[in-house]
Amino acid sequence: MIAWREWRTAASRAFVDSLPVLMGYTTMGFVAGVLLAAKGGVSLAPLWAVLSSSMWITGTMSFAFVPEIAARSSIATIVLMTVAVNFRYAFYGFSMLERWRKIPFVQKAYLILMLTDENYALEVAASQSMDDKTHLKYCTVISALNHSYWVAGVTVGAVVVCLLGMAIDPDVIRRHTNGMEFAMVALFLVIFTDQIRSFVSHEK
Amino acid sequence: MKSDVLYMFGVIVAVFAANYALRALPFIAFGGRGRPLPRWASSMGEYVSPVIIAALIVYSYAGLAWRTPWPYVAGALTVGLQLWRRNPLASIIAGTILYMCLLSCGCVSERSHRLESSVAHPIVRVTSRGIMFKDVPVTPARAVALLEENEVPKNRTLHVLVDDDFDNQRVLWVFKHNYLDRAGYTKSVWIHGRRGESGKADIKPPDRGVATPYRDRMFR
Image 1 (spheres, chains in turn yellow, blue):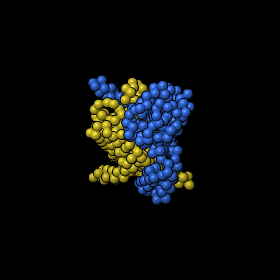
Image 2 (spheres, chains in turn orange, yellow):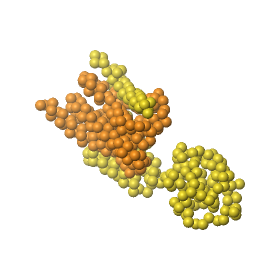
Image 3 (cartoon, one colour):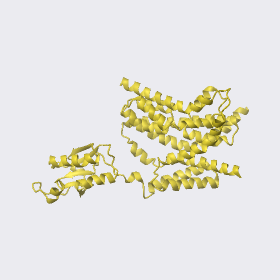
Image 4 (cartoon, chains in turn purple, blue):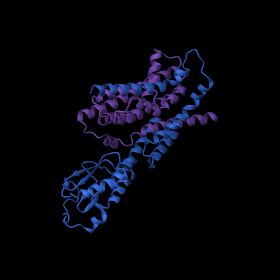
């Protein structure tokens, strides 16, 4: 019973915190899906959209790999590009090492998979005001929520292009959702502001 | 078709593996249950997060219209609201809405100012009166300079409308090779006819038999 209550507090906080990510991920994912289907030059685009978005959430690569697959670049090139673009991810784990030390393997594997910029920022920010157990539940819920936003965005984008038959220009969509991407930057700004504030108040 | 499927499958799995390996690196190196964490690794976890988030802010600003003042104005509003009210969601939504308004209503929007050049709306046109850039007569050098000024992408196909009654191949050749190609617009394509779509098509062109002095000056 007590565990249930912990889940509920963690989940409700996670849902509120995930709303800015909802704005960012669905629009960004939608554009990424449209781009993949319209400019990727591959058949079965919705399948690849679902597969890629559920297996890796990395905004930059979802955009950057489209011209590469359109040109049929070698897989080694694309892997090299991934490592170059996403090298920062290698540092995220350090902040979570202690907290995620004794958790079940599958859960840990999933949390590591979902260690994106936004998830990392939210998880670090939440870690200051929660005990380890609640924090772990918070991480799980927020990972699952953000994962679902991203998969939904990318898939809908790819499916829409397939249904409307290339009638959609990614540039036009980008122009209409122009500015929505600021939600992510604002999220980082807010978290950074809070970190600096807590740092300053600790000093005093 | 079948090789496409294999290729896409390979790409997705490869990117997944690379990504996952990067994210799992610290856990693989220091995650053993029995081993204590080296001190530098645990202190790294403490101090690295504000640094990472600061870097993320800089990095994501590069994806915004960072040459305009708008992202900084919206960012100031976000940080100010957060310092004042301490309500993250409100600060984020307010900042985002302000940024979207500034971008679409603001006087400088990088994207909307950029000229669109496509098959349906070619901005460069070759007529018997000379080269037109958006229906303004220009010299070939000026046409190229205007294309560059308006940031018309060089890697995309550039469609140039050639009037139906214009058949001076030498002029086209010179314009393509000496001006467009040299400036980097190597993917230029002539499209013929469809004069009705261009703005000033109803003006009667001068008699083609007479070489106007203007044209002679242009294509020396």
